Image (cartoon, rainbow, N blue to C red; front, side):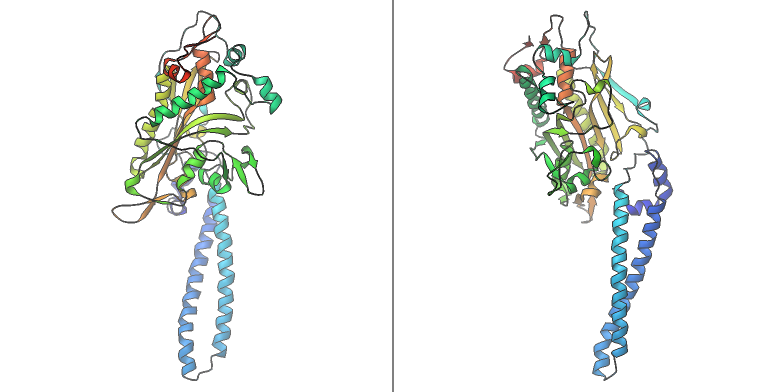
Length: 423
């Protein structure tokens, strides 16, 4: 959530940055804020008058003065204050709703662009393999080797769900364990296993609600719970409504979870196989950072996600998203894209974002400044480390052999009981 004081004091700058993300206007918000501030001034004046006169009434009574008229005036004044407080409460709710609908401001250094065609490639790692045979897509490889069963998944649930079977299920589990082991091996990231359903406050805290409620799976309506779209939601909310000590920062977490998304607007080739399903697995990395160092932490978080692909020896590239391709809550984002031979292009496998204090304001996550003793909002960051299904798909496609088998990356053989090839 944006800071209303920043919007008020730097309205031209805020308006310009907002328009880099879309058609947003703060005119009505500023009118509501102006009205709220005027009412606050009037209420404070009336309450001051009420307090002043209330202190005089005992003295007047003691002096045998008639206070009937004063009491009547105080009753009217009290009713006016009550009505103004109710009006003020209504205005504050309107302002909060409006603020919740506004996206985060992009960092001023982020490239201005309309869509993903204007994203900037930052780096490439590895060289895509040249096949001496026609490379198959992962859905064909997985089906032929009995690693994936899309037909039974569709029978059980419906379209765009997948099922891992036999060695495929074991490989998926190995990928998850490998990712978590890498992220926790030096002790920096603390692994957590969170609920896979969250309440409305948690979804609001990370920016999924209210704007994207139609994209979420809502369950148990009497309790207003949602299936998580990513572990970012429960993990970021671990410290909702808390005040941390400055010495605790930065805090690193990693978590595995299934993710549930309607993906209502998506279509095309990416809906085949494992690339864009309604349910998929992911390992997430999340950081709570001091505002002064959050962009250094952003670079390191992205590097931590990249390390998984480097260990698996999967070619990838990193792109910096332009303003038109950034998510609602992000201030700056790097996408990591893995090479997919059957696609003939790189495909997103991780999105690493710095949200600055946007989520922290929504979720009320603060820290106490060691020097001033005052509280400040933390900066939150997160990224996929990595999307498990897409990693599975990339392994099948990049490590496929002409005889139809798939070589298991060396980094995973220990997690596969020494198995080196899937035949």
